[in-house]
Image 1: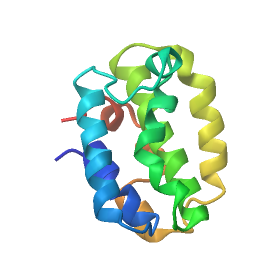
Image 2: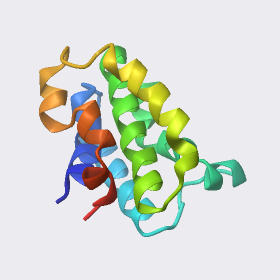
Image 3: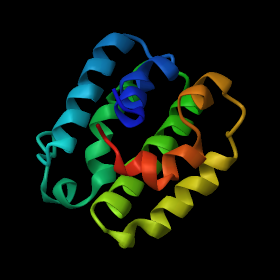
Image 4: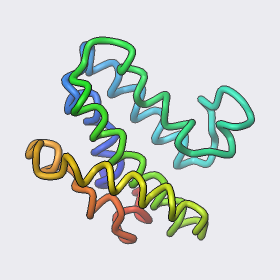
Length: 135
């Protein structure tokens, strides 16, 4: 399992979410669907066009009990990773500004959560090799 898929499967656990196992399965399902090019869980046309909107389904646990600060940091890391993937693997440079904004926010928490950083750091999330390789 690659870094991106492994990280995605651990998000709910790292956010200390209630029922993390269920959310983890949904997250991996969404990741695999996104990788296959099918926005299966897109709710509307805007979701088809905006990867961050599709990513919302992976973070459904935020409506329930979880550590909000950790969840916010994980949102930034996942967003950096997802948008960097589209930037490098799909040649979509229009995501540069959004990536930068997420990196600024993530920098505030980088190093604070060593268990999260052991799985993925903001630098790794933006790395072209990591972002491009979803295998």
